[in-house]
Length: 256
Image (cartoon, rainbow, N blue to C red; front, side, top):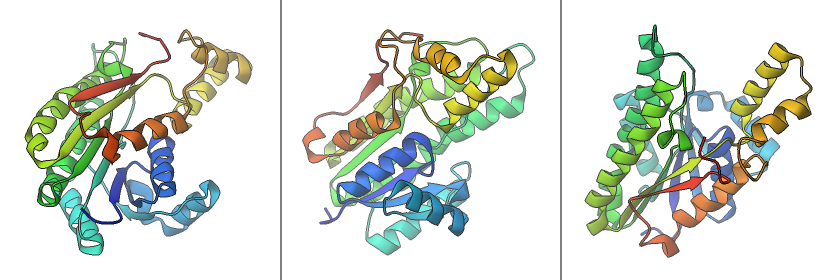
């Protein structure tokens, strides 16, 4: 195992991915962010300065096996291996089953589920060689509970649970763990977009709409990205050696 661990965080320019990337950077981990917008150097510099942490960033489209393989190969070339993989890249769009567009279904499965599989497939040989590895997939309470108009999203997130079980079994003898984190509503840019849309549609004030989302769980508080990051940082630590094949719901008591 390398003295300084190297972590790949997909979707690390926003939301939970960014919070996890920042937390890992603060703990001394070398962080490489992979995201579609990471090719915009000016945007990346602005984001890192605004959120005050250090990371590399390279363009990554998890929908492409060729792009994923090239990305991981470059990380290994630069840093000698990959110790940690955080799969936080994802998409969300709603559609009823009746009349559901193929494009929404395909994008969710290809990004949220197959994209995660592609990343795991690419990094596992390097983790096996090192005899140590940590993989964390960002799932959702939607992996456990259905929601109307969310067949594609719920299916893609539920698939992560089955994928993680298989990966954890294949990695167990090689010091590789694989777990998932399933949050309820987290106060990210995506949720803020939903809140803005509700404000526009209803005319309700911001605090009222935000409170309605918060009231979806018994704690009546929205989960913060930093809370997810704290959990992820523990799950990729040496102390989490025996934690594998598990999904950790950060649900604030809610069962949607």
